[in-house]
Length: 279
Length: 305
Ligand SMILES: Nc1ncnc2c1ncn2[C@@H]1O[C@H](COP(=O)(O)OP(=O)(O)OP(=O)(O)O)[C@@H](O)[C@H]1O
Ligand SMILES: [Mg+2]
Image (cartoon, rainbow over all chains, first blue to last red; front, side):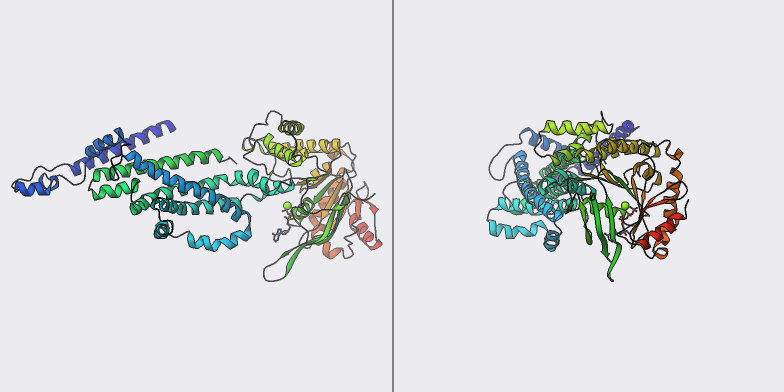
């Protein structure tokens, strides 16, 4: 039954894709050349006006361009013409650095807040105020103080990734079952050993949920951040191709962003499964 | 001989929002000798768990002290092991891992092999050989409770504390676990303090049964000495001539006297709680100091043949 469900779901998925691509193809195909236009004027106007061709590329255009990108992902012909692989590599690098910094800060701090009611009360107002700030709002401040656009982007990733991890870690640590803590207490387990052998495994599923939310947000934010700071990265690529009016490249970049985001999410989902324990 | 466990005039109060405090119990005295098995029985909410948690060091009394082996206790200790009602096993550890956690907490310097061998011997003791590598989610309720027992015993505590350890189990499993706990406690001379709601369980396991009145303001009303022989068996417990006298005495307390105790017994002395040993014709009074309390005990106990 479940096998046939998977199969049927796959059939529906493929069918939806086919309908979408067909619709896309029909909507963007050329409506034939417009006759009676001055050839000089037609040359000026380009294919869009003269051949009734939509500015929106069709699926075939995108596919052939995608093939082009995939066959040489890492070429580098100057600041405005780099392979898609290089651009996405820059973005992934920034996200990873910012994200790992956030892990290093958020998890120990979350432990502190979760284990100490005093620290929880003392730090709560700051978290409540800082959490809802759009990470991009930090950008000017970061650029002014750090003076390096790449590091500023990393800082923005850090600041957006830190909150979900911090809050989830604190919550997970604070809500470790009383009875497990009591077991550790009756066995006179020291604070450090208790943190690593009881609290950490008990809170790990909640912490991983926070980490998963964070990587998702970080990947959302990096595109916007790179559009702002420019230079390199998939966000900059999208913006640059928009300025080049190459909608084909923009669509390819959008696809790629989705695929990489999914990869990150699945990776953390897998780690989360490893630390989840059945009750 | 001085008592091994001596609870001296403890009280527990909780603040009530708006107006002062509520007293769960106060001026409560209770003592046990080494190697004794004590059971505490009382209605829900009278403060049994609170007493056990204070004994364990997980909770602190608002007043009074608890003396164990000649020393006032301060917090938890590896000398007092607790078996929790909800077994409280770590679900991310295996059976062996759960027991080994306790063993390595007590003897941090032991090698991994020694810890494992020691843990294994207690897993064998509770009859779980072959299930060492299983996680708690793969065990039945009875097996989980066995792991809890193995974990508590593995640190060879001076006192074993159990909060309704078998109440979540079916009757058959409960029976076999009671047998095992009794065998182990008798073999090792383990001092044990247990909470139960099951009168038969108390009569089978306990040497002393502590009867508590209803809360708030609960008191330890009397101590029933188990008149049944040490070599009693669970199956033919009810054939013993003193079984029904004991059972009726406790049940009668729970059904009627625990509610009205505060009104009917005005001269109760919490420091010298009457000790009753149910007999065939009439319960026999063993100790009484001072006289007024003794009168009360004879009067109340004598009503139930
Ligand atoms: N944190 C608390 N704040 C206020 N009152 C409390 C608190 N904890 C326990 N109590 C009260 O203390 C009393 C005794 O609780 P306790 O858990 O010791 O009862 P118990 O005898 O073990 O009951 P049961 O048989 O249901 O387990 C209860 O009436 C309860 O309402
Ligand atoms: Mg209780």
